[in-house]
Image 1 (cartoon, rainbow, N blue to C red):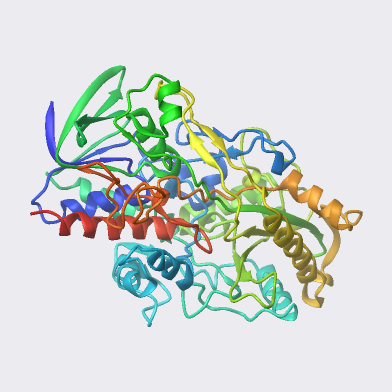
Image 2: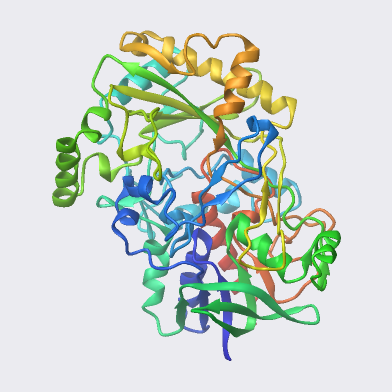
Length: 538
């Protein structure tokens, strides 16, 4: 059995950063255990290829949530990256940090060092923003962020104009002074290739002698001596292996896998563990609880102007954009499907936005089985305006079903389980229709396809968004951070309450969800977490 200073479980958005930062000085040895395989795959590296990875078991855990009464009984598909880079290797690449108020609330809840002003220097240090440096943006860091202003589909300008006509300002940078408004999204790509956490952080670290990355290595149990974590047991190629950690074991499996591994290892809710015959190392009722996620829906329209459908659907169009991508690393395949978006308030008296918008210059009403139909859009000119809630009040949980580490945990999302979440989504979908009714959009809309003009009453709108909504893949808070061991899993230094030598560093520690896509804040958590780990080394 080999011993390393640090064992990191998971090579995703946070784990990749940890591997780079903890190994940089050469002082410490680092083992990274990744349950999946390589990220060197064409559809991983090609930005719009995530339509192909959406159901691909070679790179995706393909979790399924429990049937959800809030979603009209639907069992939601929960993709999660199972490869180097984790979900940053299969996500939609939109780069949103979150709002100042989100992080200030974390600090105010008793987590010193996590306010926006505390974190801004770290955000700027990790970024290499093509839009250039300013008060808020960083350049020269490992993570390249692409400014898509000149690359988006022409229809995007009409969306921005309609947003303005509906009362929203144009916002040139959602990571700048404020979030509110409509604008073009920045994405994590570089030279037309996905800029995952693996590409930005892990690959450079893997060149060092003090870093070892084991792929297809499923962590099955944290090894404890008393209350101290001393190593990890894992399965690889049909063998059970163990590795020891001289300093710390760090869980970076994300909001599903981190609580799962804690529970499998005897850290979690006592009744759950006792019922499954798992010896209790430490009781904490919060492990796997407090699940928060963003839930979204698309409104889809048939247009009078060409959209990406006319390019991406026919064989000659696929050939054209394929050649454009392979030869020039440009065109639709080099972008996210979300060209633009924004943030707005469903209640004008609210202090800040509570809803996020997405604009897509194509439509996929007619699905193709086995893939997210991004690469096979509808045969007519269509586009979608989507939205998701930013800080819903509904809470769910993620709990193991058995002591078998290969059994997927039970994901109970509880979407729209509070009246507040239903009320704000009702107001939000009405606002989407308002944007579509503005002159800049209305003059090019042939008809609303989904949900369609017959859906007008509040009851019908609510029934529709319950039936058609789903996760937008931002689960957080299942190992949440807080000073009180009775209400949290980790303390403000990300150490697991009541145990030694063990931290959780990934999006599961978010005390509450953030306003926007979660990947940037997950990467930030890895960066900040690494700083905390290094500060604590004697």
